[in-house]
Amino acid sequence: MGMQKHAQFLARTVMVRDNNIGKASRLLNAILSREGIYGQYRYTRCYEKPTQTRRRINYERCKAIYSEDMSRKIGFILRKNRTDPYPGAS
Image (cartoon, rainbow, N blue to C red; front, side, top):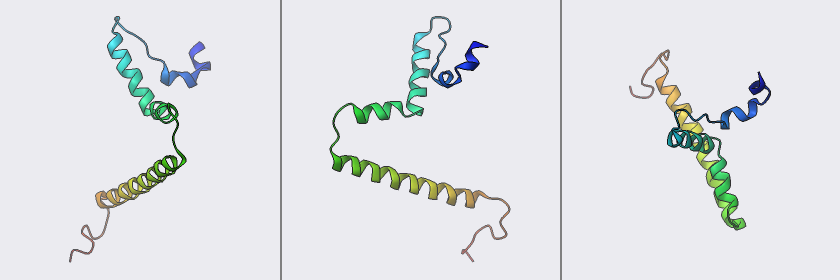
């Protein structure tokens, strides 16, 4: 009942079972990296020049656009209800 009030902390809470600290540590590291906390720490750890910031942000934008486009194309190719399964091949 008490954990439901603090649902925002559930994803970062790791229970240690059978005194297995290594497994709990790996799980916590996976959760933190998935949420992007390690990346945020890496960028705020030291000063980043404005040109480096612009280059990083532009790279992340290009990467997101490319990934979205590729996933859309792959989804189109893997669709099963197309009339012509190989468009442009004939």
